[in-house]
Length: 376
Image 1 (tube, rainbow, N blue to C red):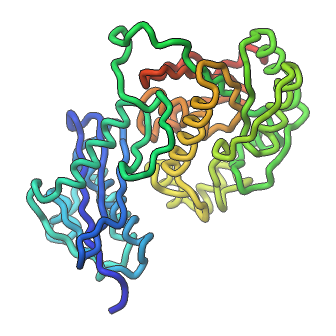
Image 2: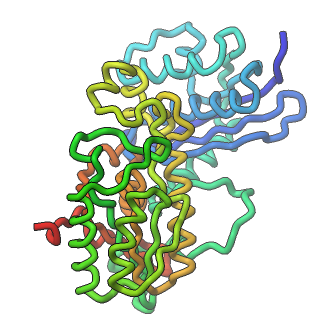
Image 3: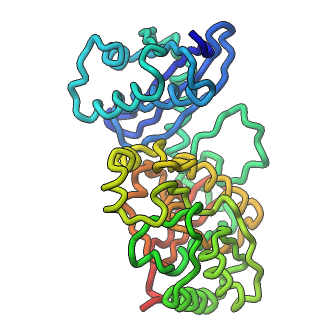
């Protein structure tokens, strides 16, 4: 039998059950105990069992990414998950069945075994799950503690919120988030990501971009313009930049999600051709569109990196950020500390405006959402 030998330790928790939830998972070399990979994520409002299964799935995926032929021993302090995945107990709850099926499909069944361990032996995964829940409460993504930190913008620091916040925070950094104007694909409601045809603005889209530019110029507060590298966002950004005498700085991490085989298709067409993948994607931030290179979790990490770079470079200024549906919704949900699936419950019209302010104490404040008054 070929393949590496790994131990996956996984855990999940919910503060309230159901309540704010998160998971953690670690992959170790089975012989040395060396940590090879870590994963954690805030899930929003969920139960303990959902969080535990999500931790298992993340751990198995991390092991598979290291070696798809690996033999894996999973260790968890959840008796329920261990017994169900070992086949000794039935998965009766309808919400757990798709999670169990997803976990079983990650590695060949004969390559994975399960062992229950007491909680005190699962401290690393438990710590990661709590770190993810703490990060979600602060409106940010979990990041590995051992990652070499670039200078952290103040937006990432924990702090009291609302009336409890100190008064001497200085001028916040304001990101005015502008979705690009319509393209020929927009009114058809077709998936248009970062690996498709890269359409430019339609005639209506150019009109929308000019109306947004006119409105922003009248407000007179924008001091810098940053845009995704896609043609439609650059064209939209340039309309405002011309009026304000500014240059457009391109930020690669603001590009739209890679929709893979769904590019150019409508929702009904994707449901017909890839029903299982679409259903999984709508239910899991870790799932990828068919043939795609990234999930919503991956997108959130790169969008957060872009946000932190912009806030750090333009501290105390107002920056126009021209991007797409998924990145803008993600910035909004991170500011609110909302769960990943909340992006599927937001409306974001073409050429609409949102605004988020970031304070030095780590707080973020959503000031505007889906404003289209300049288009009326």
